[in-house]
Image 1 (cartoon, rainbow, N blue to C red):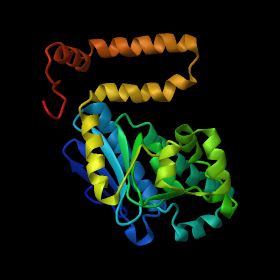
Image 2: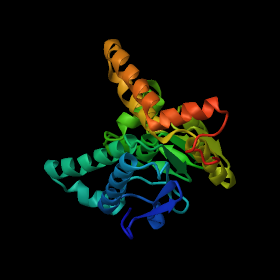
Image 3: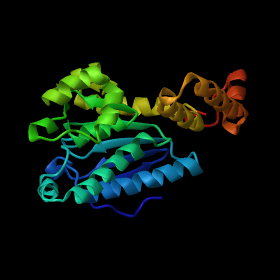
Image 4: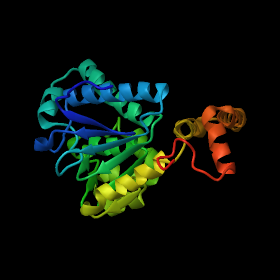
Amino acid sequence: MFRDSYSTILCRVEGPVVRVVLNRPEVHNAFNGDMLAELLDVFSVLHSAARESTDVRVVVFTGEGKSFCAGADLNWMKRVKDFTFEENLKESLQISELFYSIYSLPLPTVARVNGAAVGGGMGFVASCDMAVASSEARFSLSEVKLGLVPACISPYVIRKAGEGACREFMLTGERLTAEKAMRLGLVNETVEPSGLDAAVSSLVERLISSGPRAIGMCKELLRTVPGMSLDEVKTATAEAIARLRVSEEGQEGMKAFLEKRKPRWSSGA
């Protein structure tokens, strides 16, 4: 399904779970152009897989080593600093496309935040559906300290934390503890580092017990309903539930419920 090897990431298929691992621990998994291109390739494959089958059920996104992602690589930033506007726009559009590809994936995505998530690393967390963080993880959008803004990151962080909270930590560049990130809605759960894998596994199991097509439809509703008028919502939501009720998955789910058994897609079936 994926390429045989990547230079900046790891991609592991573990049954119904795909683990996407940022693999530049020597620079705290900071991203460069190569990593962005490889991540875009992986998520393009995942979009295709989600449309074609239900074999892959959940994506876990994490970092190798002590950090989740330290944001942009310094050497890459040195090169970008001298780009023209047109060259900068091309690079920025690539980053925007990647965040959207993660956010719009029909499969549920879980960020396993094992350490610092800075700048674009925080964008990866916010683009995922859910996040479980080590209590030692730290979060920061400090772009304003460099005379920049977290532009491509902002749509996803604002959706998670809301405008009021973002006005504080985006304008000040404040470093957030895992606990505060959870209070703001950026993280769903914080645990001691030793319990991180168990907490992620528990969440993955809960996701796998749900209908894969239903999860994809839920994600579509979450993405589109807030931008619809009430007139549009009436038709769109009625059509969504009607399609699922007559689908193979919906029929199996309702039949399993009435027969007091687990549906076929459940890991315990």
